[in-house]
Length: 88
Image 1: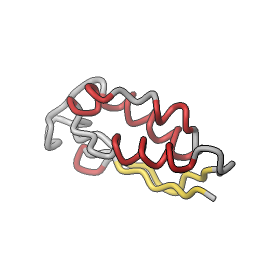
Image 2: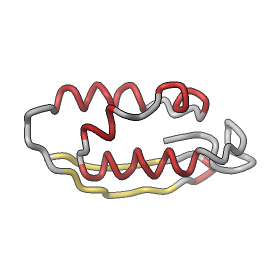
Image 3: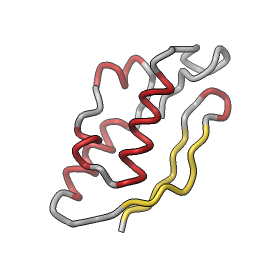
């Protein structure tokens, strides 16, 4: 996720970070390939969300596989968004 969720986050506070993380987390947790593909590269860069490119690569690899997702964990300790999800 992003690294801009709080004032003390590595990327400092950016008001857009929480919404970006919510979209990414929802997409990962539900294996929503279209939503992953739609994540904005410039916004992800601004928010220091290094996972965007690998998530979009994963989306391409999973296309047509009929996978479902399950969200296991989501939090933002130290102002950095973390998401754990499984696809099967």
